[in-house]
Length: 410
Image (cartoon, rainbow, N blue to C red; front, side, top):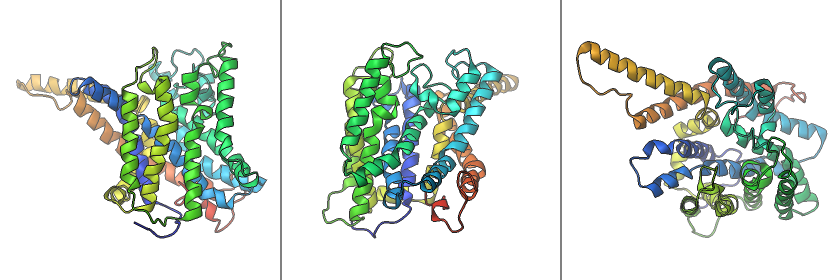
C-alpha cells in the first residue's frame, strides 16, 4: 500500500471532482425517478448534495498541501496567491453569471432573480460573491454558485489560518472561534430585517463559510498530516473504502431526518446539519487519505485520463448543471419531442419519441452538459487560467515561477 513521497499533482483527486459534481447533479434531479424508487431511496438520492462537502474538504487539503510549507505573509506572496486563486475560479464564474443575467433579460425567467426588482444590483452582488451572505439572495444568478462565496472566504482566510497555526501554534481553536462568530451573528441579525443577512441558523450553518469552516479545517489538517508524514503507511486499513462507506452512511442518516418546513432536504434539520458539517467531512478525509496512500481499483479509475478530464471540467459542469444552461437544454428536448410527434403524424405512424421520457432526457442533458463543460474548459477556462497566471495581473510575472504552473495548482 505504501507509495512514493509527496508529489505536486495527484490525478485521482482531480477525478474526485467529477464524482462530487455528479453527486450534486443527482441531488438536484432525483425527482425524475419518483415513480421508480421507494420513498427512502428518493430521500437518499436527495441528500447527494454531499458533493459540496467533498469540494470543501478537497479545497482545504489542496490549498494547504500547495502553500503551507512555502507560506510567507508578505505583500508579494499574497498577491501571487490571490492571482492564482483568481485565475482558477473567477473567469468562468463571471462569464457564466453574466450569461445567466443576459438569459434573464431575454426570457424574464425569475429563477435567476427570485423576484428581486433590481437585477443590475443583483448582478453586482453575484459577480462580487456578496449575495452569499444574504438569505434573500444566496440562490440567485447561478444558484449553486453560493458555494463559491464559501470557497472565497476560505481562500482569503487560509493565509491567516496558516499564520496562526504555524507562528502561534493555535490550530484547533480556530474553527471553534469562527463557528462561535457565526452563532453570534445570527443572534444579532436574526432580529434585523435586512434581506436575510445572517438571518437564521440553517442558512448560516449550511450556506456560509462561518457555518461550514470545520470541513475546510479537516482538509487543512489532512494536508498537514500528509506534509509531515508523506504517503508512507505501515497499517493495512483500507481507508479508501472505509471512508467511502462512511460517507454514504452519513447520507443515509440525513435521509431519515425530517425535512424542516420551507427547506428541501434532511440536511437542513438540526441533526442533518451536525452530520453534514461535522461527521461527513471526517469520512471524506478518510476517503482522501486512502486515495493518497493506497492503490485501489477506484483510485485507478479516478486517475484515468478520461475521468481526469471530466474532473478538470467539473467546475464548469457544476456551474451549468442547474439554471439557465440546463433550462435551454430542457426546452430544446421539449421542442424536439413535439417535432418528432409532428413528423410521426405526417408519416402516419404511431411511434415513441426518443424525447418523451424524462429519465432519458435527463441522461441526454447530463451527457450534453459534460460535453459543453469540456469544450468550455479547453477553449476558455484553461487558456484564461494560463494567461492570467503568466500575466502581470496583481504582481509582475517571474520567469520560471513554479507558482504560475497552472497544471499543478488545482
